[in-house]
Length: 482
Image (cartoon, rainbow, N blue to C red; front, side, top):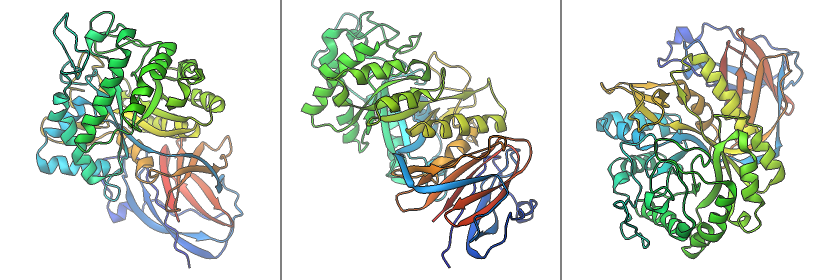
């Protein structure tokens, strides 16, 4: 009898359940009888925060696909985009609070975040190229006194990142060598900009070649520390400026920078790091289309990246439909004190960000700060009430926030190299949503969301086999099988 493993992960509290507590939900009745052809191991957590990755009684897989329950049918022959990973941003602030833990606390936290077996198995991290609004101070890798320039980048240094970011990144790679890194700058050095400030302004065209070499230096410097940069974006949020490191870069300017400087510089240096356009909100899909529509820039660009602070996730499909050969990436969303309800946040993240982006062809999904302290910092003149994926209190106590569990539903079970596969939709009035993936080893992963305030029994149909399960109210589940 072929053994089928099914893991259900439903986000909730920080505390596991006792064996007695685990059995408080009765198993569902089946919609039709059949012979057992496998067993399912199930892990459950409910949206009321009473359960967290708690093992449940096994279920049977039966050889009867007929059911009267809302159902989802998996079609593994329909293969869509390849998944590169799920995770968050290892900002300067995140690296600082993590690196100031004791060795034992740090190792435990990083295992909880990145270990595939014992933790969330996160597999993708975004780095800031220089300072962001979550750094200890303003800096780039080549700051010069006012009025001075450094056209040969003789002053280039990643010393700021050697203090916290690089040590933590290396610790992460020692736990999970599969982790990919994307780098995004908030600003070019002030001496390259028309306003000679890290705040706002634009990159002057005379410095395009120099700034392209700046990216080359960055990639090579991190490589020398054992950290491969898989992708970069030319500018974080290029349509936003503020009183922290920012820089405006219009779509045609980005296309010009890529085709005339960045792409050729990567070619000369034999750098295979992907160039990902845009890196801003859903509401300006025309921006990456302009970059990709430039026939000289297009060959250098591997895809485009989006944030979720404005617009709708369907913008990613708009770009995909026009440029199906280019990748899509989801690179930023943050929670914060403006929304503190665990259950509603969890459901929104799963449906709109993780399911939403991958249903719209994204190859990854990243949240903002990996870790912040209890004061939502350290901050650098940006968001004052953002929430990290985890919160590290001054006492050393670590809180796993709803962002952690939302990511873990995907990152632990949908591994790099997986493909999204075909899955039917649940009935419109069922309150259920789902998405399926096939891992490189052939195992499948199905994430199911129950948005409703009542328990829902549903069926998963796999060829001629099926299993039924009753999912607790306002909960999310991850199901895996061979």
